[in-house]
Length: 71
Image (cartoon, rainbow, N blue to C red):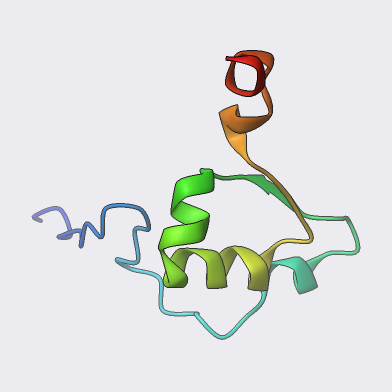
């Protein structure tokens, strides 16, 4: 049987996921957090919409490290 084809969207892989109505953070009482890229968050509306919908907390990956802030 051949491997299923994958739709590469660059950032989000939506292939094979049919349940797009459920909100991930509603699946648990535990606070859900995610590390994301700052530039994707401010330039990609689809990406930021999913992050805002599905997670309670966000950390901007490498943007919070000393070398990114100080230079």
